[in-house]
Image (tube, rainbow, N blue to C red):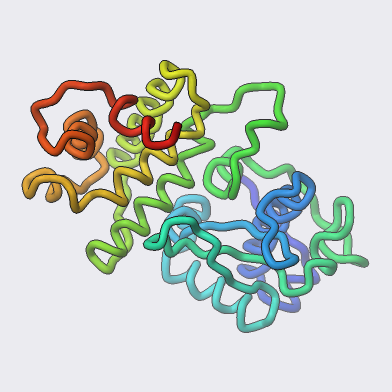
Amino acid sequence: MEYSFNTEHAKLYGVNEAIMLKNFQFWIRKNKANKNANHDGRTWTYNSTIALTELFGFWSTGQIKRILKSLEEQNVLMVGNYNKAKYDRTKWYAFVDESAFIDTDNTISRNQPMEHTEPTNAIAHFSQPIPDVKHTDSKPDSKNIYYKHMLSLYDSFCLKEFDAPCKINGMEGNALKQIITYLIKVCQNKGMTEDKCTTSFEYILNNWDKLDDFTRKQIKLSQINSNITNIINQLKNGKATQTKSLAEDILAKYR
């Protein structure tokens, strides 16, 4: 995987900051073009630290936090919170001076050309702030579209429950993908759009305290994946012995 950055930005803000800026610039520009994520007169993108850690595997979580803080302190990025869920602490980012970074065709700033490379699939996978399903003729991998959003929801859930971010390894990441696949199939079987999978997952996390004591302790994504039918049955019926479908359990809430 290759990463590029604007050399003038590297001189002004630092090399690491310039690499991070390239990522934010791409997605904020994309959102602006699609008229997405507009709040308080600015165009935003959101990302959790854990998602950025998976994207930039050569940086630690601590390094990423320091880079983001540096960009805030240097008055390049500003932080907001426009999450619908109260417990969701995922940060939203916008440029303080959007015109200096976004309002050009293929440049980072008004006068400095960008060393341009197309964003990699990994960037699209972990950094897409708002899935752009409506504006594409091809069907992207749904797990990739919703993975980042649902990972952010789960990370915020862990922060709420344990005051610590979630820890994701390969097994847990695969479990989340299986959860996504399952929820998408349920939505499709009920004639609903597949993006409701994120709403369904959010509903599960928001109502976690309604589960029985044993199930509440099964908090790893791999455990949630194994118990998902039981979890949803409990949320709807108050007991785990029911066998109604996940669609009947969750999606009825959003018809």
